[in-house]
Length: 427
Image 1 (cartoon, rainbow, N blue to C red):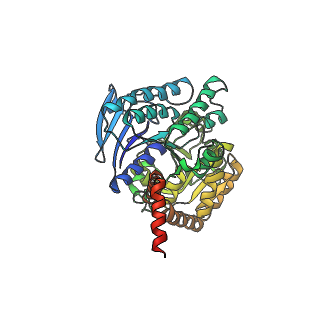
Image 2 (image 1 turned 90 degrees about the horizontal axis):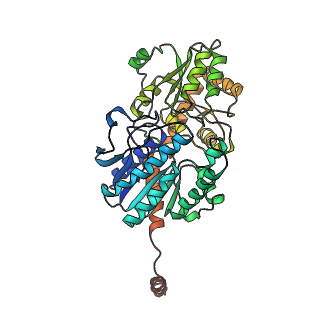
Image 3 (image 1 turned 45 degrees about the vertical axis):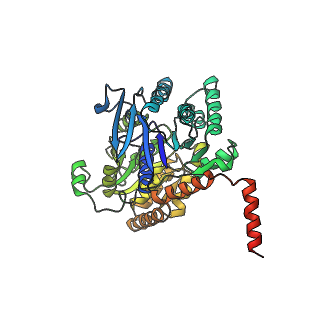
């Protein structure tokens, strides 16, 4: 099959969406399928067009041997009108992809942003091909729960667009079990339309590796036990809990450092918080490509992930958790719901109540004071990922499910003939 991937985020951008789609596309290609991408000029998560793409409206390039068509976008971060303009601008410019991309068999649309369902539907009609709507975040639910937008006309319109998107899509793919359940039970999407493609891990890139001594020296981390957070530093994550835990433990465990890699709408505030507390055991690094993140895990004692204490996140499964496990490192997770259950099922680390500083401090003490337990958690996590969450397994299962549902039922006359033939054969 030939897939057209419509997404606002794609490598060389970093973060969960571009990494997820890159791995998915690589697996599709390895299985003999074709792919083409329509995306935005790279700007995520910094909110600035990357230097080599500035002053361009459109460019075409090759990635892993496939064509990637990039269109202008109003680059921005955070919430509010500027972020809406970011979404709307690409929803308009991406339509020009009809003149550059080949006609696909299926259009795969990444959401958020929710608004991409509109150009997806238009391209679907123009090409006469169905589209699959991939739901990685239940928007506008998340916006409403985080109070990023007031209840009113805009939110009601977004809710209407959400349900319209589910109706017009041939299939809706959920990234977590919680999203799948919500789609069927709350959003009333027919179960036969809902597919499942969770986040996985590139187990060739992320794996247990010897400590990168050069990187330790370069970052000045010799003698430090690093707890690594690698990903978007956004409003949903609630990383204050890590800063406050680091403050409480800086005298008790002076040989540990929290390293946070990434960018996002909450980074500048958190950097100011660290500065105001005069913390020397918290470091911020700029976003890094996956290859560098893998190297950073080689010098880490454990990996960390967190989410705010909101009902919305009951169905969240942060991709960071799977990357940590694949790297053979123990997990520290300040969160609840599906992500917590995943870590506990894999016996891959310590789970603490979301936004509870005291619980996180106790979990960190336990892990930092017991290296043998940390090694055991790391081995368990790696084994769980190898058995259940490799990208090859996940994409293969998703394709099988997709193909079985795409096959139209045989006409009634043919079914009757088949039954008649089977009946005579059984006599």
